[in-house]
Image (tube, rainbow, N blue to C red; front, top):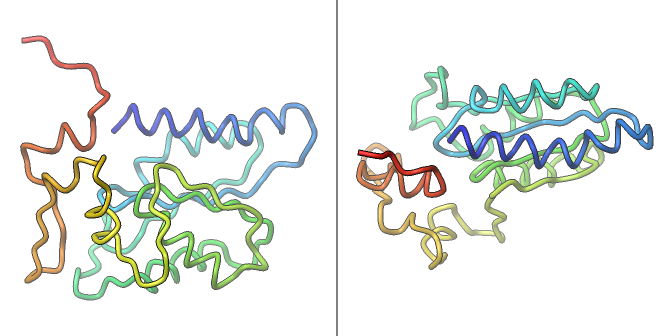
Amino acid sequence: MKKSITTAAVILMTAFGTQIQANTVSPSTIVIVHGAWSSAKDFKDVEAELKKSGNEVITVNLPGHGDDKTPVSSLTLQGYVDVVKKAIGTRKNITLVGHSFGGMVVSETAEQIPGQIKKLIYLCAYVPNNGESLFSISAADKETHIGQYIQPDEKSGVVGIAKEGILDFFAADAPKKNS
């Protein structure tokens, strides 16, 4: 996960840092929305790097993630969007960055407040068509390994990853541990 987040920092710094250093644009307001199995804390290093270039950076923690104890039964896409919109407030010219599942959240946010959004960045993210769910999109993706390891729990309303799939799914490009 750390390598993925570091890669995110490099990608975002390329998108923002170089332009700012060249004085061709003013610093941006960047709002980062994490994926399904992470939280805002996973992007703190990315946030710090982007702030070094003078950007205002807001990492949004979605309800039910990280330290947030919102019950699963209360989680909705609209609830996620409302949290992002609250974080944005009245700011304009926002660059919204959605990581993984966060792509769905930023897409809906941008549809609801288009006049405040300058740019959308999808970082290894899902971009749904109307009526699609994360589950339906990922199930149709034959190149991802999620289908092998996904474990939906309809009773509790959560989706997990089987223990044996965690490394393959989240750290496929990480160096192998020498035994």
